[in-house]
Image (tube, rainbow, N blue to C red; front, side, top):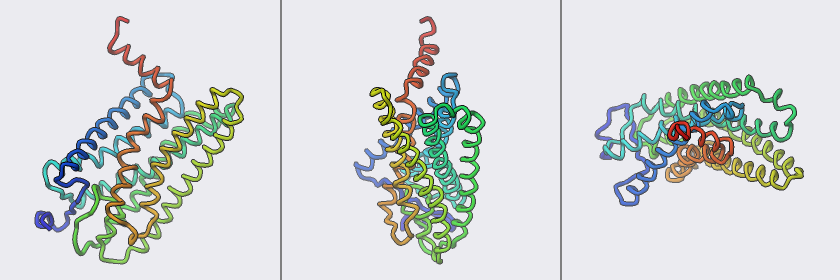
Amino acid sequence: MGFENHTSGSDFILLGLFSSSQISLVFFSFICIIFVMTVTENTVMILLIRWDLRLHTPMYFLLSHLSFMDILHISNIVPKMVADFLSGNRTISFAGCGFQIFLSLTLLGGECLLLAAMSYDRYVAICHPLCYPILMNEHISILMASGSWLVGKINSTVHTAYALHFPFCGSRAIDHFFCEVPAMLKLSCVDTSHYERGGYVSGIIFLVILFSMIFASYMKVLLTVLQMKSSEARKKSFSTCSFHMIVVMMYYGPFIFTYMRPKSYHIPGQDKFLAIFYTILTPTLNPIIYSFRNKDVLAAMKAMLERNFLPNR
């Protein structure tokens, strides 16, 4: 109640993740480290892909967009969390909340499509290598990346406009660390079932169908890998696909569980815990799993370091 007295009529209050306990201080420090790591990793990945000709392939082009999305996503949330914790002022304006929702949904939807495009790239590269230049070329990768951004923005515009038009009659305290639609719907004093049904339709398209496509692609890749004669190639491909699927499940699992449940089934503490996976942890893991374990990326990084820090070598 203390926060509510310091807000204007249209402001919201983000209750956040942190309290004043010592454990929260440790967790706050951990989140700050994760944020710096994520921005650094993904920025390095974008620069490497842009700088090294060996990485000018459709897969790495899509990865550069994934890295950019991850930078924007974590930057949309963590700086506000840090500022709220340090200042003690947890209010956010109606416009600020709307912007957070719009950017978050744009990036979440766009990343779902981008991950599906990347799984298609791996499927074609391993299962139909001779057709790769035709089925997955520069033109197609540009269309995939552009489509991910465009469809993500269109979906986000519809959901943001619809979610923000509901009246909020009682408390404006959002029990979350950022403005997320399921948490805001709980504050509305009108029936939101029509919107929720529309949300389920989007969830089926962006989450269930795309996840099924990704899962099917990697299963087909694994079946092809198991038929390879080279044990080393089998081991490498199996390891790569396994790590990719782990990251995909870490992203899609909590995302599906959060957005495919009715409003009455949402528990604030559970929602906040699940959101950490697809807003903070996955952007940190993506460049490590998809890129920094790759020999081409490591070679490009070594060449860039030698060029910039060991010019006489």
